[in-house]
Length: 229
Length: 312
Image 1 (cartoon, helix red, strand yellow):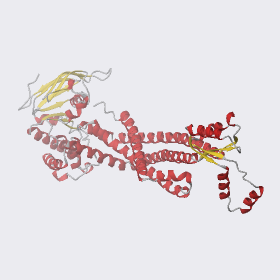
Image 2 (spheres, chains in turn yellow, purple):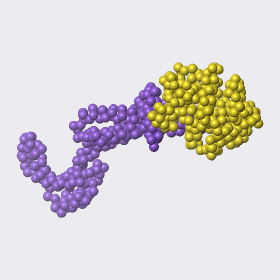
Image 3 (cartoon, chains in turn orange, blue):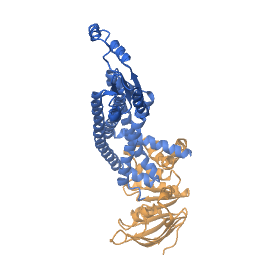
Image 4 (cartoon, chains in turn cyan, blue):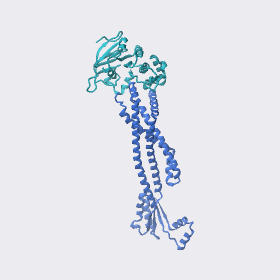
């Protein structure tokens, strides 16, 4: 599903943010990417969403070779990838329902279909009763679940969650992780970055550790993933 | 197809919403555009009015050629033919001594004493003449010179270029027209530039205040068109509203001024033309179109510079 082959990314003269990363993620896998801040995790995700291009190396996601991807087709690539941000990126002036609907409006979905889809997605993240609330009326965990709902509303095959628990207390953090696990169970490949060791331990999934722009370890969890390199 | 229509409708809805969201900036941008459009429209209207007034004044131009008594018939015919073949002449009328007398009597029939006085002098003192209608003011003298040629000296007593004071009026009107045109081009350009700058900045600020939203849109897979669309709709709305307001102001001016001058021959034609439904429709349509073009042009500049849609 995701393949990175000797991917390097450097910014100007500074030392490279990513140095020859190799990573292979299977379909329906749940991978946790661990590393302290500024180790290259965010760069990696930006490469996957094509916010940035690698300096060298190959990236293939869902069968799409990024080298051959034209700029005008980038929006269509992003529609296949759901992204959840640490800072939620919700639109404050829109209700929970409208925020989720927004992602569907962008792809030209009809109002009828939107009215049918949004409650279903809110149900998955456990926010059915908050559809008419504004983000400012929600707790951090609830906001992050809205962001997840928005990311999965279009049923992407890949969900990338960039430090989704970064700003949350432990209880709310677990709410969010549980939602991600549920989504993974439905068949979506999930890529989660975090530096929360507690979550990493309890999740028991494949863990890829990045340090100084390199993959330093790749441990399989109980059920899936590859063995340590 | 259906998806495109839905998307188009959403882009319009978002643009209209943004217009009202930035209401103060929108009002400023629209107001400056109204000023620019009013100047342009006024320039066009004044041009139409002066042009048709000049046309009206230019009709009835004539050269009167007064003939000696007992002229050579053949030479007189030759002169008449020469007038006929001149392309700037639209009509040649020969007025015999008798007719001249009759016309004179007719115009002074109230003034019995004058007529009695003339009768006392005895005989017909008025000369025969040609009245030559000239189509173009600048050719008035040329036509007059035809009769002043040496060969006609024996039959022509004098040549008078009719309405010489009219020539001055026409010259003045033409000068005024030139002045109005150039002054309004300068004024309209200045205001057009000002309104472009204001729209440019309005859209720039809108882009800055919505930069997070735009980034989210990009990451959610919005196409550049979907992001640009609302800004284009918003700036087109300045144009549409400014066009309607400016046309209404100019139309009101035409009606209120027109009522005062519509009795004068020079203005009848232009007033009728300007108040025709088709002209009014064209004025509204043209000014809205012009406004939309200015709006789209300046917002496209702002987006090209600040939206950074090239880097996905």
